[in-house]
Every structure is written in structure tokens, then in C-alpha cells.
Image 1: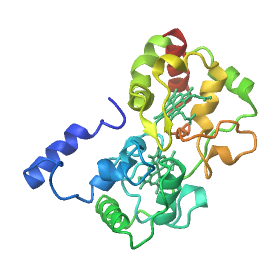
Image 2: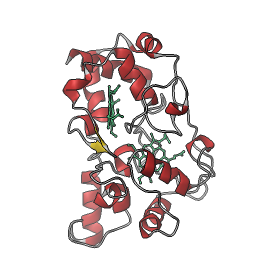
Image 3: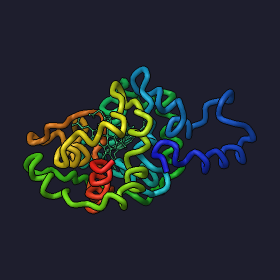
Image 4: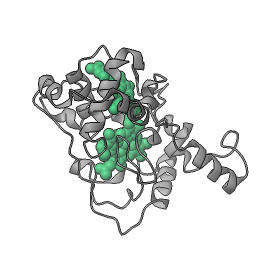
Length: 237
Ligand code: HEC
Ligand code: HEC
């Protein structure tokens, strides 16, 4: 399953059933700000990442928290963002390279209505935010050596392939092609996956040396064994 295309078939069906026509050539729908070109266009010119690249809408895990039941939480980004607009803007500016939205921006109004439509007002507790920040690359090397390369192939496709198989552009940066990832050390790959990204993320920590538009994965999003296996798969490939 590719990250950014993973929901395509499901929502293609939904859309056809609901509206009787395809996305292209018809009016922009609120969901398009989550998963369509309207979403990518919230970022820098050329940005290909959409909210759906990093956030599911059905409770399943990607690098970012699921957008299901997101809208009514009382704080975001581990308390760094006081409201949904601020949480959204951290991604729009930090990862997607775009300009911060305002509450009355038509794009934000549409996005908000979609996020509210998949959220229960009774879910208000903030999501925890706990990136794994270890001392240095050597510490990640120790923690993430020794994975199972064969088991890593499908795990790589699920968590990394959506961006790295097609060099997807996230904000201003292209994702390195898969074949080039093996040139990084085990420790470097693990550190990148665990801490990359602009504040408020693991890169706000002084020991982080990998800030960049690639999103980070918390251990709750990608368990340690899965990352070990992915790295073994990359190094073997
Ligand atoms: C390149 C990946 C990426 C893209 C694109 C992206 N996000 Fe995020 N987002 C993240 C990561 C990583 C986090 C922080 C970790 C977490 O919250 O699980 C995050 C956090 C958030 C949060 C805070 C969640 C919480 O409960 O604290 C919100 C809200 C959010 N994003 C909304 C959006 C919206 C809306 C879009 C599209 C306009 C978007 N994001 C695009 C990766 C991304
Ligand atoms: C949302 C898209 C996206 C996803 C998902 C993603 N990456 Fe990346 N990755 C990028 C981008 C963009 C860059 C280049 C910019 C940067 O360094 O942040 C990058 C850079 C890297 C680098 C280079 C590190 C360095 O030191 O420069 C490594 C290694 C890497 N990714 C591994 C992974 C692995 C392993 C996964 C899956 C667990 C993964 N990526 C998931 C977008 C992504």
C-alpha cells in the first residue's frame, strides 16, 4: 500500500457513489483539502504532499496522528499548538512549505468542515506527542541494528514507499529515491525516521541533527521492530 495513494480506491468509490462523477472537472469538495490536489496546493509550489500523505482519516497509523476524531481536541502537537488551526499551520508551513492559513480562509473553512465531519465532539483529550530522541547516531545504531530484511519489505512499502518510491516532493524537498537510502548508516536512518521535521517535533531537541521536511514517526506509529526490519531491508537492497 502506498501512503499517499492508499485511500484512493476507497474514496474513489465513495466519491462516485456520492456525486456520480470524478474529482477532476467538478467542484472542489471539502475532502479534497485533505486528500486531493487542493490539499497539496496549500503547500509550496510543486509540493506533492497532502494531509492524507501523513495522516489517515480512519484511525490507522501513518507518521502523523489520524485525522479521525481530531477536530474537537483541546490542544495539539503536544501542547505547542493551542487549536486546530495552529496545529494545521505547523504542517502547512513546516512540512508542506506553504503560507499559514487564517480561520476565514475558504480552504481552511472547507478543510475544517471535512475534519469535523469525521470527528466526534466527545473526543477532546489531546493526543500524546512523544518522539524518541536518543543521545546520538551511535545510540540509534545500537538500538536499530539486527532487523529481518525479508520482513522489512512490506513494512517499508507501508511506511516509506509512498514517498521514497516516487521521490515525492514534500514542500521544497524531493524524497531521496529508495536506492540511495542504503548509503546512510543504520544509526542515521533510524535517527532521521525518529526525529526529522521542523519544530514542534523531535527536531526541537538540541541533540537532533536531522531537521527536514520528512515527517518523523513516533514509536507508537512505527514500533521498534518494524523500523529495525525496514532498515535491514534497505541495507540489503
Ligand atoms: C509530511 C507529513 C505531513 C503532512 C503533509 C501534514 N502533516 Fe500534520 N502532522 C505530521 C506529523 C509528523 C505530526 C506530529 C506527530 C503527530 O501529531 O502524530 C503532525 C501533526 C498534525 C496535527 C496535530 C495532531 C495532534 O493531535 O497533536 C494536526 C492537527 C495536523 N498535523 C493536521 C494536518 C493537516 C490538516 C494537514 C494538511 C493540510 C497536515 N497535517 C499535513 C505530518 C504531516
Ligand atoms: C511524507 C514523505 C516521506 C515519508 C513517509 C518518508 N520519508 Fe524519508 N525523506 C522524505 C524527504 C522529503 C526527504 C528529504 C528531505 C529531508 O531530509 O527531510 C527524506 C529523507 C530521508 C533520508 C535521508 C536522511 C538524511 O540524513 O538526509 C532517509 C534515510 C529516509 N528519508 C528514510 C525514510 C524511511 C526509512 C522511511 C519510512 C520509515 C521514510 N523515510 C519515510 C520524505 C519521506
